[in-house]
Amino acid sequence: MARQKREVFPAGLYGMLLFALCCLTLPGIAAPIERLLVGTACLVPWALGGFGGEPAAAADAGVAERVAALARQLDERLREHDLGQGPAVLLRDHEPMLCGVVASERRGGGGQPCELRLDRSHAELAGCAEFVTKGDVLLGTLVRQGQGVAAADAATDHARVLLLNHPAARAVAAVAQLPEGGALRMVVRGAAAVDPAPLRVDLWDDPYRAARLDRGGFDVRTLALPPQYGGVPGGLWLGRTLVWGFDGDGIDAPVTIGVFVVPPIEPRALSHVVVWRKRDGVAPPGRRPEPLRRAATVRELPGASAGRWLVAADVAVPDGAAVVLEGFCLGTARGLSFGLGLLTAFPSSRHPWNLLLLPDDPALRPREIVAQVERSDAGAALVRWRGDSLDGESQRLPPGYLFTGSNGPHCPPGLLLGTAVPHRFDRSLLEVTTPSVPGPQAAQVVAAEEER
Amino acid sequence: MRRWLLWFLLVPQAFLLEGLWRDTGMPSLDANVLVGLFLALFAERRALPWLLLGAAVGRAMVDEARLPVQILVLGIPVAVLLPLRGLVFGQRWILQAFVAAMLAVAIPKLALLCGRWFDQPSQTAGPDPWSVAAAALLVPPLLFVLRALPPLRGFAEEP
Image 1 (cartoon, rainbow over the protein chains, first blue to last red):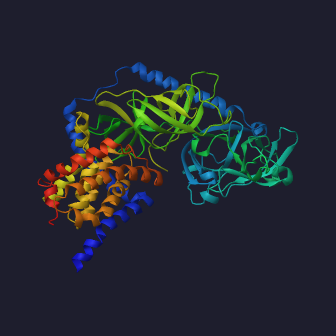
Image 2: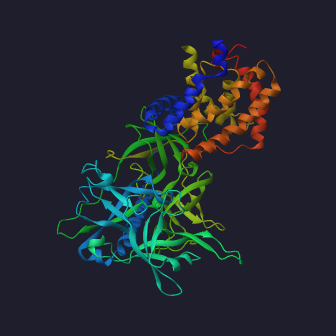
Image 3: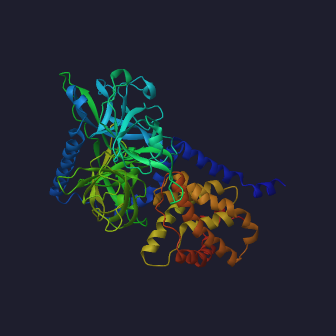
């Protein structure tokens, strides 16, 4: 009888499935087990790969120099664009400081991340203004150490930015100029996670006129308020309106149910933000040191699909570490035991990437986008992008060089992936070409010193 | 103990061997279907969770998604097909071919679904008719041979 019951209900198998579900909810439980098990299994192909020849060193030092020059150009153009157009009221007694985004956390309005961790500590940004911008776009506010979501943070922890779509973010007074004349004043706050955009309009100065809005796309900018009401600088761009409701059918008039605001750069695409440091005569903190690069060897994993590599380094390979070869980022690795890692090359990966596009045309600004590979063939990939509508919803991306954006502490912004050209027919697709890697190679693994 | 060592040593490598086999231009032999069919129809029930873990490690070597996702992708079809065991035991080739075809469709579909749900996209391509036909025709005879060899022989359940 007991045997029959066991046969009908294989408790061990169901237990293993339940354990897998728990591990997906709490990834920390399974990570060490996975590192050990998959690492042990990878020892066999790694040992066999040793017979495939010695790793080749970088063939042309000039390539690495050219890549470094492109990375410098990206940095200069990012600074030029992001720091160039600040709010006048802040520019009077503050100076802008470009900060990298290390991580995007928590789901906020529009289902997008609503909290950023910066590559600077609370202590480094202690004297900065509250507002965080990018160009002339208001993104959110800096959280002071010991307050709100940073209540438990130490001074050396990564500084936090509360984006405007955070449930605890402040509401902002704003105004939209209407093309038929006049303006609508409103209060904008974070939308719900299920809403179609990160921000929504909460209150109107003229609700009757607002209810007659039958199309969106109007620029919404902040209204300057006196310091006792929050002191938000005026004229900063929040985004464009998105009208949600029922279209008219010729007989019935369109019905507006809600008006949302779509930020020109999606929160999940942000790789850099600008904080405003008080001009107090003290020298600003220096540039953040680049994460360490450790020597490593990459070998193709025999039998795996193209673009899957084994990485071996003298130190533990961190999860999500970028692997760099001659200045090019090949992809990110999953850390395993015994100093091994499994690298998925960018064209073979299917997870979303934060990317930076440096247009060939030096007059154009760099684009911050989030993208996912749809199809790939050897070193070429078709990538669907979104996230940057600064120049309008229907813009096409220009051809240029594609760099990593903010993809975690071990994959910093500014690593060259390859070249990108827009798809001929579909504006949301990019054709990306990455360098091919023949045989075992001496490479580098990016490993940040520590995770604060 | 030896049978477990052999399972964890050889089965993960089968996923790489499958790729090497495919690279030679031979008809595709899906290691996922092979392992899934063995676990669902022939493996010792008590040993199933750990056998599944060994197979999932093999999938985690060749696929981007993490180990828990691989456990679900292989384990859910096995859990669903387990009650069919009474029908398929012995050498009912047609039913085995049918189960292999089901696995060839279900595993890639499940990999895509799990990727979407758990935000861990898989590199697995969607099922195509040729791979489903190859799985149905080639995997049952191959499994018949492999069941007589270690490590599968050590875990084959008597009818």
